[in-house]
Image 1 (tube, rainbow, N blue to C red):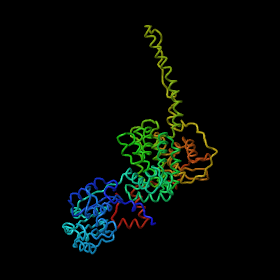
Image 2: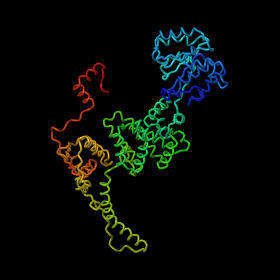
Image 3: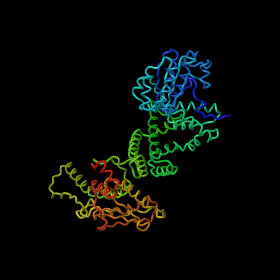
Image 4: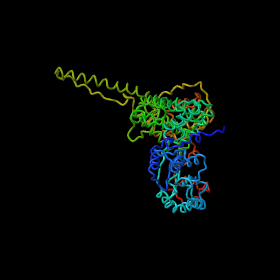
Length: 582
């Protein structure tokens, strides 16, 4: 027996069997019942939603000799039998994609002059009508406006904007909607039952989402999945066959971000990229997932979830754990990543920083200083700040104790009305040295307050790393530096650390002041790089740049001129187009 694909085998034959277009089919049935038929119809909509199918059903019902009371074709009369057997001379289909010339339209016009042999009308279905040339449209105009009484035109297109306004104004327009996920799932269930195929509803939901609103696409994917799964369509097999990112990854990522588990999120990102998925695809999918979680927080918006019932329950469960503010901030951050993804030269780093920012939304931190950007990453140098705070607090407390005792004595004398005949008590003086500061320490700067070098926790690790990995982690470290070091971090981002003698890392600094500041946190930098590069033997060498290593900072105009000098093609293009740097 010849195999027929599901998209053809289960193509609707009546208006009632058309899925997801109830309003349009009702209108067409009422037109058949009342006999109030227009001379031209235009069916618009995305691919695979039933435009051509409805055109055929409508043409069959128009020519039916004994239509039903509901406006359906009877399937018994001579006209219906001829249509079903594909021998009808009253219904013509023209593919405008391959017959788009003036000669083809003229040939069509010749056929309109011949009245129908059986039935009342000759129906001409022109598919992909937007492919007609401008000359063919113009040749078609007069006949379309005033066709013979026995002629009806049905035009179908996926790109309505490409059709001439003069054509559109002569037609009744019917806009077909995209299929909803729920409608596609129900139709796939019916097909699976008739074919004797076992299925999981989550697997059908994946197929429906992949079809993107097209029933024909959904049936084609269904056939592919049925062949791969050998008659038992499961969620795991469909995800594997279609190379779709498992939604469980999104649920896990949100859980990690809620718990500030940055390391676990980075590992999961690496696994997803290792499976061949693009980082931008992950961010877009995660944004859609967060949107669904946000919709699941309110019972009124739960119907907006175009997912299966089981998936909806998972979204509602996760929505109970997610604060609304977290979801709003996450959507904003991921939207910024999507906007900047194309222009980014290091796309993976951009995705990693985006996930880090999302994972730190619920992390408690100080209020951003005035004038600072709230987008900054939270500090990973908190230990350095925390170490200096207890000592200063103890010194301030020690300076306050004599003042408190003097205040208490004064209050006691006033309470007992004791005359102050004794010599006046000298006033306490507060010295800078009492709070850990002297004029000499102020002049010396941060180097005098240098803390003890932190311990390397992973000395046993000796992982190899490349210059690219070193530069990426150096940039990420500069992004994470605290707000107090924003100026130093900005200058450090312009440096390019190099591997001088593995695992020796050399950093060239272009001025003495910055060199002294970096020497003050050199131990902290070494501990951070050892941790992120998984090598406890790293050693950081800071040195002043030699005269020949210091390069002047070029303006945008100077960079543009240098690029034109080095690339003759760009220079020629600028001359031809008369381009100048704004």
